[in-house]
Length: 115
Length: 109
Image (cartoon, rainbow over all chains, first blue to last red):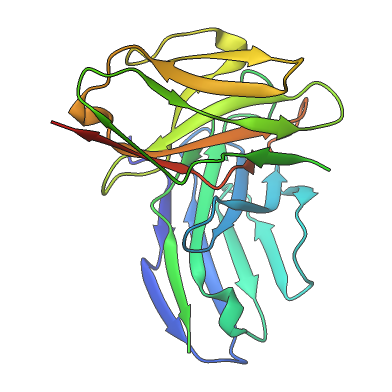
């Protein structure tokens, strides 16, 4: 089992640019969630997709968007990058939409640096 | 407001000493509580969850609804327990997790 895979591992962008981060869930998992982790903080929820539909959105501006493909992989897009977008972006997958017995599996993350 | 608070950024203990990592939460409704752990150079992973009432690697956590707490405990710390620990909560039927800021546990030999 390869686990949740994210690409790229590291990324350097300049202010104003756009970035796309990718995530492949564990085989059989239909839900993908995205989290932003700023240095010294816990992960903060950005989006959840289940069966290609958005199931939840965190308190992030419209510059952040995401989608899920028929094979359940997902992309997170961030437009008009700001210095404050520099963070580790984590992807997590689960079998179902969520709930008491659901377990999230996290990827290793994409470290985004905005200069 | 939905919030998870871990008051200690760093907890340092000696091997064999008891450990308690504190977690307090604020949530309107019946949340599900979790502890996630990140060992050095490894991914964030689930340690235990309230609903399972399990003990993993000697750790236990009891949900105290009156005090809105979910402290993580282990009677005798081991050096391999050194890691970053995050307390998190979610609502019913949702995959959204709200994380605390994390506590670094350092177990000294």
